[in-house]
Amino acid sequence: SRGTDENARPRTAVPRVAAPALSKAAAPQVGSTAGARTEILGDSELLSLLRQHNSKFAPKPEYEPRQHSVKAVKEWERAHGQRYHELSMESRAEANREITAMQSDKPPPDPLFAFSRGSWKPMNAV
Image (cartoon, rainbow, N blue to C red; front, side, top):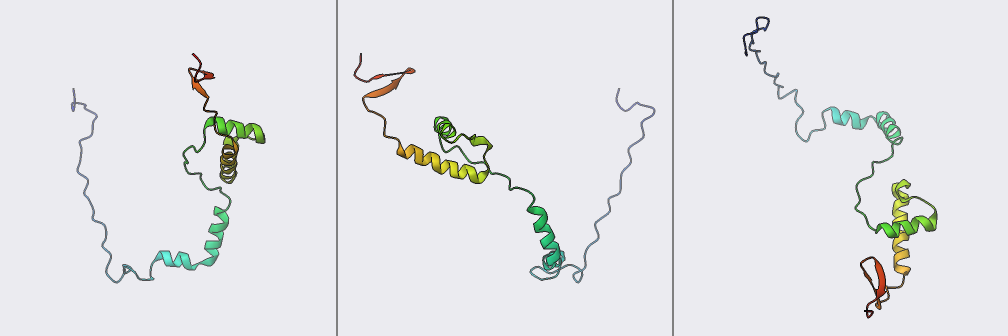
């Protein structure tokens, strides 16, 4: 049964304390140059240290939808001897340009042949 535990402590109300209000003189005015942000921005030594620290980390890649078919990517991988998914962001951009060029170099498909149920056969064949 609930609430009949002899060892349970009774609940007590916790008084809430209001946050101290800043006086108008202490609070930085909107649009003013006062405040911690300008102190940080003004410290060039700290900014250079931050830039040096951030340069150690590669940028996180953002999601890019697939631009080419799996078949086209596999053809590029065979032609170049590299794995597409192991490339860096910059190398993938270059690979995408190369795949696009490879696809534009291909002749258009022969209209006399059509793909039907997993096998190639002439359209006029019975």
